[in-house]
Length: 497
Picture 1 (cartoon, rainbow, N blue to C red):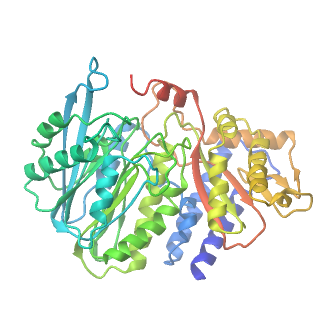
Picture 2: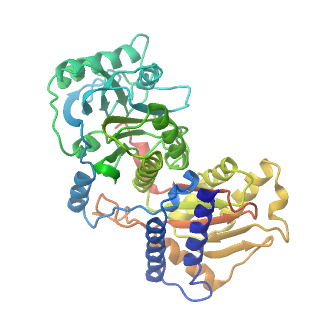
Picture 3: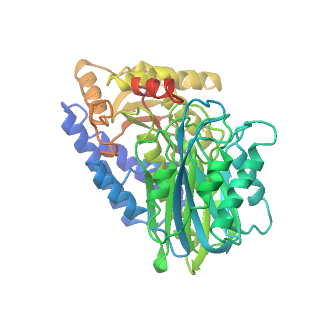
């Protein structure tokens, strides 16, 4: 009960900080200042309590790491991606002609994270898409073993290895993984991971040749984070320090086809904290649901999503609470960066739903909002067309049999940027408020539509939407999404060219 109460109190304070400007003119600069106040409150709350926050509200925390230019961001990622004890990493690259487009040439990267010795301390979650990639099949089989013997993860970009033809998918994944295992003199199994074009076959001969050149180094895995990228604008990493000198580091790639139904995209987590395997799996599943499982860019569920957690087990006496707090923090940061780095993304939407009948219902409502194309387009244009928010809420409530929650006198309150836009069954709008709402959206712009804009997260602000259905204060879910821009359409119109 204390965990949930803490989360509710935190969100109440955040809501108060966002509403302090109501009734007064609010410029774009003032909107940005409110975001800064909100972040300060979050930091204060984090320092004031050691209780584990509810996983469903982990995304209420702002993204922590930003940068003014690409060089600063690259340096930050390099420091964030320093590996825990017992891990090393390496990369390689290759050119190939896709079997499906033999007149073109493509470039592929390989990235490997390896343990110094095999481990059975592994946890993972994979996509629920029935058209899953061969690496998903292989990874599930390895994790299903009572005593897995794992020593590395090997990732490639460009080709996702999803049903390329009879006898190709799984066997090709094994062939490339075995080549890396031999080249690196590993004793344990290698978990494969692939991302890129769906339906293409892996260029096995070229990949085996490139794998033979892999070498392992200690230090930062930032080059692996870069090697995983496809349409990502920048590499993404996060870390959290644990007791007794342990740490937990996460790398993720993902920019489009983001509607995870498990974990997300390709996400690799490594730690030196010793933890029971069953505890690792339970913590991962809880944290993924409220982080990587609560984001969306375009509503399309990937065939290759995976999130794998490995431990070298070199640091003892780390509590489960401390471990799960660190895991939730790292996953929340990575989830923020996935959306902030989404294809064509110029605004991040954060939808907080509270007072619903249960967390799953609240999450479904939040996801429906961030995936609504009309709302996404309005946000892209800094247009506070709030009917698109409340209309989508009404659509979901009606579909699930709760139509009276928007009736006159109902307890439902909807806010945008801390401003009440719907209450008691009616919209609450005026000219001055419309201007403040638009300024709130402008303050959250990432500037990705500006020529020469840096490929890095330049600030931590979001377009904030709050929905209170009037039920239990212990029920809350926070979901992240993105706007829908010309950049997204262009990216996906030209994806394979």
